[in-house]
Amino acid sequence: MAACVDQCIEGVHFEAGVPARAAGRKAAARALSDLAATAARPFALLLALSAERATAERRLHGLIEGVAACGAEHGARLVGGDLACARGPLALTVTALGWAPSEDPPGRDRARAGQVLVLSGPVGGSLLGRHLRVEPRLAVGQWLHGCGARAM
Image (tube, rainbow, N blue to C red; front, side, top):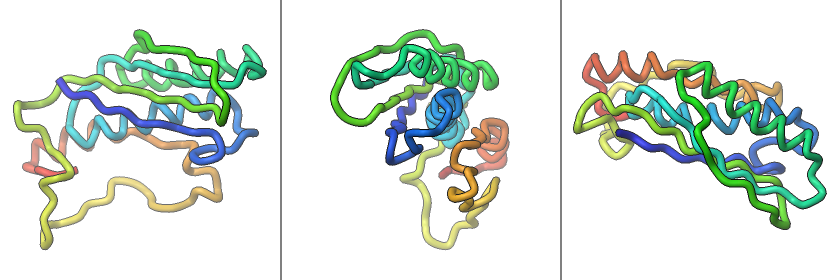
């Protein structure tokens, strides 16, 4: 099994005016993208959500719906989590759980100087809103691992 966790914080990873579903989707996609780097097949998501008391219930629902929808697109059901009232920026922490392809999945610690570097998608574009359209490259991660990739 593989587990990856990632945070999305309002004012850091997305602006306050971003639609709730888009922010929730981004939070899930970031965790699923980390899971893709282990060549794992996702099966579940957990969401820890922290927001100020004044946050509208509709916004909270939208955030949760965004996480759940992104997970469902990639075979990972939102199965639980936590909701907390706290001062400070709204924060989503998503844990993605998946089945690892082997006892020795790829890891960032195995990258070495001189190895081939492959990009599977565009780089940059945050000012154009691309950061809200993160696409977990799960099939690419599994394919690269099958081709012998040791670091992703």
